[in-house]
Image (cartoon, rainbow, N blue to C red; front, side):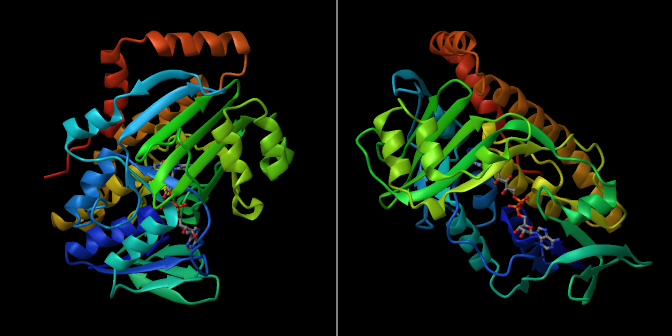
Length: 382
Ligand SMILES: Cc1cc2nc3c(=O)[nH]c(=O)nc-3n(C[C@H](O)[C@H](O)[C@H](O)COP(=O)(O)OP(=O)(O)OC[C@H]3O[C@@H](n4cnc5c(N)ncnc54)[C@H](O)[C@@H]3O)c2cc1C
């Protein structure tokens, strides 16, 4: 069976690896001409490291990123609010949380696919269902046919648009800035992650190893306020006036050209994301806000689950519907829970934000643990 994968992000590459390991013939197409070397990092949570390990990719041995050993929540000025038990949760689940530079992870996944054709700079514009499978058409006019098509082409997926019809993305009224930069600071311990909660604004500072840090910031912006979304460095620093010194220092240390701005977006959950021999994985299927750090993680789960169901045999179209059914509830829950958490995190009213912080400080540890472990639990399909 030949599977065409559109998109060589974390979702598409993991899907291709899982399919290859099950003996499928796979070909991957990506619109981007070459991989970006700048950009942000990713927290790869226990659920996803468990899947990657099952695929023979152990991030702790791959020499990229840093295992998360400590996770602190603070106020904007750096006053401690709560230490989250991420390390002990990861220990309980038996798989670490690893913070990595995104391009390092993508490179590693590409290396694991050695021998599989990955066509960079090839934009897929549509697919056509044929009697026996599916044919894709690319912007340069070339066509390619396979038995199954996997749309792993991200939040603006053309495969999804064709399968499900046009739908708008949902804007959530804030911008995210992301970057990685050489940076060390006494507040950022090895394997540490610190999140700072302000009013309608947050910041994350994360050790990704080798003297590098990944940082992200968010800020509420009025509807249509694209000015803030350009993420000019001086503007970002102005927004962080009065924040903890290490927050301002890491932004100041980052070349302006290395800061990427993305609006906070997701889509209304799609209950059915298949069309005959066509299915979706990752952001193409269920884009979510970043609050739970599970977008890439759930894309990794998708890829593994899809390969599992296709390998179980039978008619491929039926296997794709079994895959989608297996993923639907978990993906819907992650999208909804990310939105709920995001609303709480981006509270702008100072009184409400203070109450939020107070509640966070006094929540019973059993509840904090339950809330944090839920998204990171994933059983491999058998
Ligand atoms: C600020 C921020 C922080 C985040 N932090 C985390 C985190 O800590 N942990 C986590 O798990 N997730 C995180 N995420 C989410 C995560 O980045 C995404 O969920 C994940 O990258 C989705 O992977 P994907 O492969 O589905 O899509 P993408 O990464 O978007 O990849 C899609 C690929 O498809 C290609 N493509 C698009 N259109 C076409 C076309 N027509 N033809 C061919 N190729 C095409 C693109 O070039 C791209 O390579 C974060 C997201 C943001 C924005």
